[in-house]
Structure formats: structure tokens, C-alpha cells
Image (cartoon, rainbow over all chains, first blue to last red; front, top):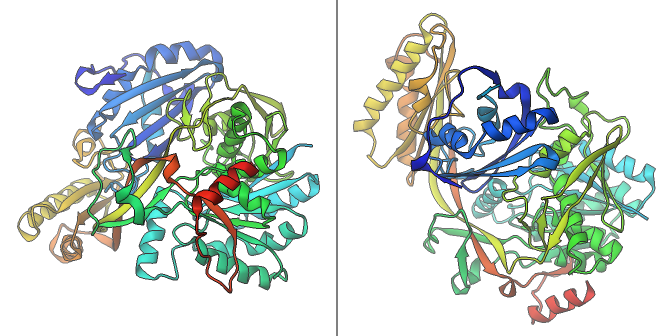
Length: 116
Length: 476
């Protein structure tokens, strides 16, 4: 668990698009979003675990008011689940965003670059 | 013998012809089976309450008349029970409609059961409530309160099945309970057999969003290709008495069932995978694995269960005033600067034409919209964009009074003649808003039960709901 005020900016420099390494799906409950992400290839899983930490995800969603990110690892599925609080700016019934569910946001995460 | 769970729909607004292939396959396989329609989310429950507020005869799933007729007769004739939360805010109204549809299908004799007890609006103030973990909102005033519905577990649905219902109509229940209930009824699992309950609940979890486990909501061309998405097969989960789960789909249908599709759905809307809370069991997915056994056949194993939580989640809907949205397009040379100018002009106008508490959001679709914040941070920081592209300025406004959101979007409309050059394609719409908040109620304060629906007499609540609930527990 990580609080917003402690998050560093963590963007990679020399890179592979995460979109090439992993697939993901987002789901919402209230003003909380989860993004489940899975490595395409088992050999990339450890790299994703080391690169995609809570700080990176919190920084990525900070512009939308994300207050906390928790990451749960599921190595037997080659996956990890990010739970992001207060990122939907009101949730499905309260947001003014076209996508109140935050369904598109899995691809905001997949848009980051991973240092090889 | 194993039991088959078919999905007919995964949300309100889902494909209305999807259930036909599923039912044909259930009949072909010839095993005991049930078909469930999951059409109720946080958004759709709010919409249903809003509809019933405006017309008491509404408030149930508006597409029932398209979902059921193609499969109702086949299901009843072949003993395939149908379960649906399409009752939404008005299960009794939905039962009456199902009765009419059954008559039209030539089976006026079917038994329809209604699940009661999710609606706790009238008792809300007297209950011991705690906020759901991610909830920040205080309970709204009575004047704003529209509804309060508990996420019921499978017990009352099992009671409905023990009444030999052909069709079970519910309001708010935990989505996977629609699928767990026929398993409990068929296998007679114990309500404290946590591992089996967890397997049954996850069978429902995998099936509840329809095609999302079988190739829907998955395709990413070049990386995740899906065959025949236009005719994607909705899932059929085969469940064995020991809790073994096989995810499959109808022969010859589009889509695909792979380890990837199943994994994405396994964690959909899950928070802590070791503690996935449902009304009937806490599910532990820490050691869950998926294994491809053959084409479009994936086994899920390693699911464990823990005792059910002491409290049940409740969604409260309350009046959220009004929202209005309007959009205008700019394309071609210098389009981005013209769209940006239009936004600046609107902001300047609204500063003196609308009250300060009007909540607004501006998007430039094509530059930054769904990823952006309400403050438009990404629009300002976006990487170099095509100045001559095809952009659409969107304004969304929210206020308790309709007149002020109308004023806001009317100002966008006025850009036609008074804004930058070459704006076109204005669309404008209004929505009453219903806000939602989530709380937890004590399980003992919830009195859920099932009754056969009889169109001639109103479904009177039993004199002692506690007795009824106790009976249903004993039956389970």
C-alpha cells in the first residue's frame, strides 16, 4: 500500500511498450477501479513485477485524484491485480467523464513503457 | 452427473439473441441445466429506480420482452430453469410481464417465483449501517433517498427453486448467486461447505458477464485476435459435484475460451484476490489456476472458500440532480486551435451566465477525453497533436436544477453562430442523475424469501419473515 504524497515519478527511458508484453481488463465498484494484468509470456512476469509497482501506477493515475494503489500478485496466473482508489471522479453514476466506469483505463496502464 | 450453467445475458443492453445458441447447446448436451440473465449493475439499478419514479409500472429490465421469448418455450419444455435479476427495482412488475410472455409462448402453466427482501428502503434509518470500505459519502437526506437494496445471496433463490419454479425473478442479488443457486439446489451442497460454495460462486462470477469469458471484451487486433466476434458464443460452465469447473461455449459459435480469456474474467471487479467478498462465501483465489483442456475448454481449479461475511453490501440510490451534455466538432486546418478557442469562450461565458456551483467538464475528443481528469490536465499536457485533425469539443454539466445545466449546454449550442469558424454537428442531451453509495448491513437484519407469483393476488409479505427465512435455511 502506498499513499499519494509519497509517490515518485517513475517513467522508463529505454523501453518496450507494456501493451506488447501484457493484456489487461479493468472493472469498477463505486469510486474504486481494479485492473487485472497478465503477462503474455511467463518469462516476462518477473520483469513486470519489478517494473509495475504501486508507485508507478499511482503516478499514472494521479491526475485523476487516485489516492491509493494496492497491488496483489498472482504468480500462478502470471498476473497481478491493481486496486486504485478514488480514480473515477465520482464513479459510474457520479462522474462527468464519458467513461464513468473507467472501463477504458486498462489501456492507460498498457500505454506505459517497460525498461528491458 | 455434472450440471450446466448457461449465460443468456451479461448486462442490461446485452445482445438479445445470444441465449438461443446457449439453450440449443444445453439441450444438445442433455445434462441438467439452468440459464441465467444478469442484467443489473450499479448503473442499471439506479436507472431502474429513476424509471419507476417517473412511472410506477416501469422499473424492471426494459429488454425482458426481447431476451425471453426466443428461449422461454425451449427452456420450459426441456426443464432448463431460467433465473434473472431482471426484476431490478420492480420484480413484481417483471413477474407479471414474464407471465404474459409465457402465455404468449403457449405455456401459461409455468411457475414463476419472485425473490423478496432486497428492498430495505423503508427500514434503512432503523438499521445498523457501516460504510462499505471504499465509501466516502454520508447517508443522504430522506428527501433525496430513492432506494436501498441489499445484495442478497443464493438462499432465497434456492428456496424459489425448491418451490419448483420454472423461472426465478429477482431484484438486487449478488450477480453470481443467480448461478450458485441452481448448483446448491441440484447438488444439495451444505451452506458451510465453503470450498464448494466458492467454486459455485466463481462459476457464477465467470459466467455472469456473458461473453466476457468467451472472447467478448477481449479482442485487441494483432495481439489478441478473436474469431467471429459478431456471433460470439456466450458461456456454458460445466460444474461437477466436487466443485470442478469447466468453462466452455456452444459448438460452432464465435469467440474463444482460452486461459487468457478466463484469467481476465476471473479477476474482473475483484479487489483482494484472497478475500473476494460475496454474500454466501468469502472466496480465496490465491491458488486458483487455469488449464486449457481442449479447444474452447478451460478448467479452473484451486478455488478455496472461507466463512461468509457478517454483513451484506447495500446500494443506496439518491437524487443527483441533472446532467446535460453537448458536443460540437471541428475538423481540418487549425481544427485543434478552433476547438480550444471554443472551450475558452464557453468557460468565459459560463463564468457569468451560470452559478458558481455548476460542475462542468470539458473534453476535446480526439485529443484527450476518457483518460483525462475533470480538470483537463491531459489536454494541456498532451504530446504534440495533429493541429489539423478531427476534434469534438464536449461539455458535461451537473447541477441540482435542470435550468442551469440547460443554460450550460445552450451556450455550447450558441457556438454555432457565435463561436469559432467551421463548428458543426452539435448534439445535446439531458439526464436526471441518480447517485449511489454503498453500505454494509447486518445479515440478521435482512429477511429474504421466495414466493410463487400469482398474477391474481398481490404477493403479500408473510406475517413473519423470520420464520420464512429460517425455513429456507433449513431447506438448504
